[in-house]
Length: 299
Image (cartoon, rainbow, N blue to C red):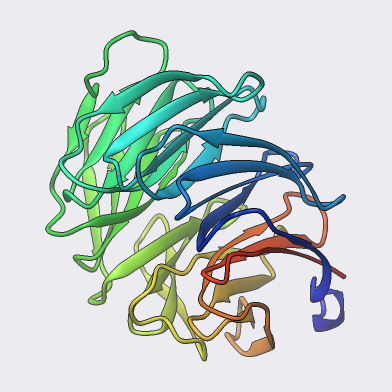
């Protein structure tokens, strides 16, 4: 994918949130996206047509993250009210609230089968919740972190999380084994490459770091953006050819995966870019910002 083919044309602006939008995520096939924000709402959009479909309200404080199941029937969300909400997408009804974190919850993810939700908290813990059970207690608590857990990714057999303590930790669900890779800088977001071989970590020294998932080896570093105090997402394009990161000055950066050169950078938002989500198949992405907007980018 050359720089010419990167999605840099603004196709739509999605407005509706009152205040900062903290995350935006495509669903599994890229037809819809979900956003959440400081206004305590979650919103479902058709980003390609530029329309809002539904609003989900029940959180008592800001909503920091949202994730939808692969069949689009359920979603989970978390935020400042310390709870994980498990929703029915169609009706907008909250099926269950999972309580147990002692502080704000930063991130949530379903597993592939949508049977469990994993949450990452400011209380230095990961908690695993059973969607099928009526118990509100976590089925597992992982509390080996020394500081806030900011981001979590799941594979079929592992939970991978990034923390302000400067580590990316991998937990094998089957064996219980933990591997810790120290990056020496607070980690505020992690993302997996599409081939599953690499972990991309955004650190608060304005550097993205690419790690080999099997060895923990540092493969590459990406610089140029500003990320010192805010949670700014990072991800890879669906071909794994480019790395994408948001910047606190409203810019969006594309780097070449292999040589780490800045392929492209442009002003995407008026304020901090909080989130970026790349379409699973097409050359398209959505970004969100403290400026209150979500922007849809195409070629």
